[in-house]
Length: 110
Image (cartoon, rainbow, N blue to C red):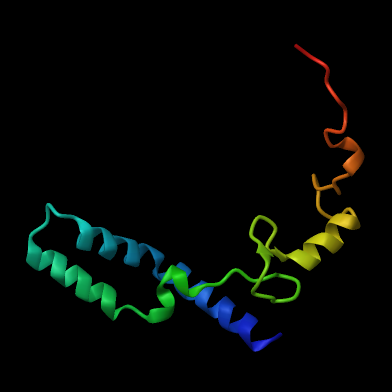
């Protein structure tokens, strides 16, 4: 496996393991009904958490090639792999569009 794929897997595991704790600290830091001292302590706890525990540290990558650009997130495939699998019929519910089905008929009306 390529190193960036392994790094991404490691980052996703870190996000998953710290998700609940991070959500609690974030809620406490943003809750205006709490005293300012408690909110400040929550903010400090958030800043002490590992950097890779933030959900923005993960990048959508293609599960076939590991490519980080042009990823269609519903299928977790890059555009090229998506096209190949769609043409081979490996993706259920996906079919190639055809120009003959497009609105080429003329409608005569009022």
